[in-house]
Image 1 (cartoon, rainbow, N blue to C red):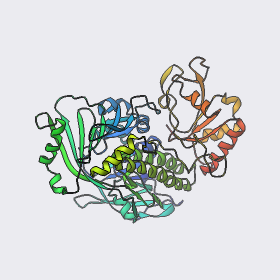
Image 2: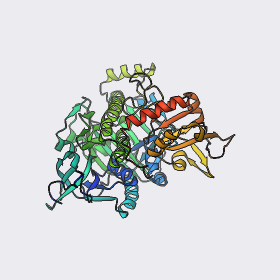
Image 3: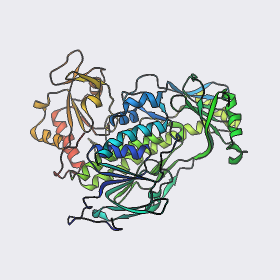
Image 4: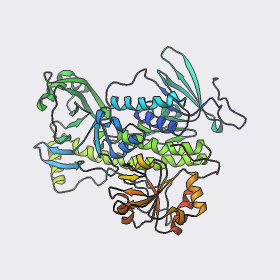
Length: 541
């Protein structure tokens, strides 16, 4: 291809161009590529490294992320790559619990609320799934290519120039480009997008350890809030653990980042060269930061390219996967002509506010741990033992964007919140809802759709590819209905006094209705907010 975009007479990218160019092939880029290819989109990925990075970065994913990964078809690999977390404990120097997050009970998304995992194994599972779309000609992955230039041609698409280590230059075309290329994003730099630093940063020595023999750690994850040496102890997948030690004010990075220092600090946990392998030691600096914009023309940012956060909520990778789940269904609608391109303008506002609250939680938790002054630590201990705990929940609702509003601009709960998931049965098949019914838009109802919905409403639901699901209890199954085996959906609907709940493809509630009249208003708002063009067709699942 030439250095300028080749276009059709209609002003769109050449038929040989990709629908979406993705830069970066870590978990966030992988998930985006699979989500888009699954919907029939042609995706080209550019990744600077020749081979996958062999060491873990993230070590935990939450239930909502597990739900997304399962929807991609890799749930069978979870036991091999990860282990559920029983609890996350925050202890002071004396071993007293200051804060505890319990994860033993089943999660609201149908998966454990926290799973420690080995990131290279997760990336291998995603790559295996992606290979199915490569074989079908929908996905192309170009490793060993560094992005060097981006040209945005407006309605004519985007041109990406990439170069190999040998100096070979390749020019790629696409309708849209998404930068998933990490905290040091080349795409963000090429766009000249600024980053707002939220001024919370510390240096930590990270030690990834492979244990020689199985050991039980209860709870699985802990923060040791000892001012003499703040320490993190977490799982990192089967047979693996991670210890992190905060750099103290009188230490240099150089003296901290040595194998001798790592083994000296690990020894107090009975981890020695005789019973473990130190797979890696490195000093890293975490930041709390947000890109100033997540969309510039036809180029968008996702994952660490758009945001960085302290590790204490375990939400960095999870937030990136939420980004691309949000983005993928909107890109699909725009690419197939079902929605105006302005729909993508809702991506940044929806996700940026959500991520900002997640970063604020991560900073709150970090301020509990990152205390090296004994007097300050004593005050902290007194505050927490008195019951004053962080006030931001891990699960955050959307507060703006594509949401039904009943009064002014207010989206009333549960609008914007993730819908729970449980086991259901239909036509003799039993399993979690997403696997039995499918993903995409979902209309949950306690009514018979044939009589409750008008022809126009059914047509709109068909246009957006929605699954219309009539729910029934396990005690009173009904022909044609989906049986709520775990009593998740019917109690949820009763708790919000709804006869209808409309769910977005990213599992967030668009709106609820207590009558067919209210449902009409909800669907009318959906049609307006999706900026429908009438030219689309139901997506493939």
